[in-house]
Image (cartoon, rainbow, N blue to C red; front, top):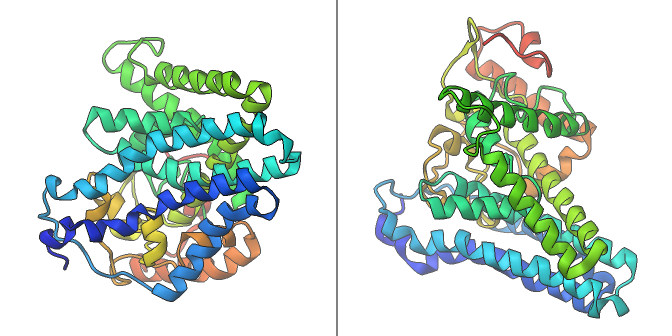
Amino acid sequence: MISAEDVARPQNALPFWMSLLLIPLAWIGALYGGWTVILLPIATWFLFSALDAVLGLNLENADLETGEDQLRWYTVITKAWVPLQFGTLYAMIWYVTGPGDAHLNALETIVLFFGVGVITGTVGINYSHELMHQKNNLERWLGDILLAMVLYSHFRSEHLLVHHRYVGTPRDPVTARYNEGFHRFYPRVLIGSLKSSFRAEKEKLAKVGKPWTDAANPFWRYWGLQALMLALAFLVGGWEGVLLFIWQAGVAVWQLEIVNYVEHYALTRKHLGEGKYEHVKPHHSWNAAHKASNWLLINLQRHSDHHYKPDRRFPLLQNYTEAYAPQLPYGYPVMTMAAMVPPLWRKVMNPRVRKWREMYYPEITDWSAYNKAANPMPR
């Protein structure tokens, strides 16, 4: 176990700051063009996959008694990323539609902003996920700003009110079903998460006698922030700027949902009857202890503990061994690439799912009801 004193040391927080190195790579692509526009996908997918292979696993856990004041070197990175992403995104829109237009052709610009979407999704949405789970209003607002920059503000409502409550059940759009390829999962989750998040907020207001049109509905804030972000894109880059903004947002959302697909693929909570399910436990999420990708993703791969204890800040998330949680064979960079090839994904993951079922639910012999991707069980 890592003591609270060791956790608090700046050098132990430093690896999680590696995400900042992605911003210079974006500018290298913008300034030099050519092959450099692919640096961001190469770094986030292939470089971190290679680092995982070299550096291996991190199986150590931080002392849970570590105080909030001892985590300041960790919490500042998620807050600092917000203005850094904001400045980078809009400055790059201004540059490629203005001064950079002379040396970047259309294809280079499209590929460059694909890379921008990779980091606004891989880092930005991931950091917003950390921020939205905090009780501090400032941090929640910062999370909203990050989500507005990728036009996916409803993710906050969906994640907090739907996903954490119904994960591993048919009522959770984000839980991928057994044998459900990503290309079928993706359109389903885009529509399902929007509907479920709006319905959750509407039902929440109805409990206190308010209509969905009430000003307390956070969707008004979501829509307002997203409109503001689009307006800023137009101001700095015209209609081309708006199109580039929408393009990077689409890439970012794809990055988010492919990670969601990996995190819970085919893991289901036992149905207890009358629409009730067992409590969420560590074995209802795939766990990955790969060191480098956990630095990049601020321990998101310790997802088993995140769902078990959602209020833990990322430095304190615990790693679970195979005895307590199912393990991914590789970190998220490799697994998300594999998910894009459904036959490969099924070959790698389906045997692990069957092993998981035998280990945790040997009494269940008919899994057909748990494999369905539609028609949720009664409440």
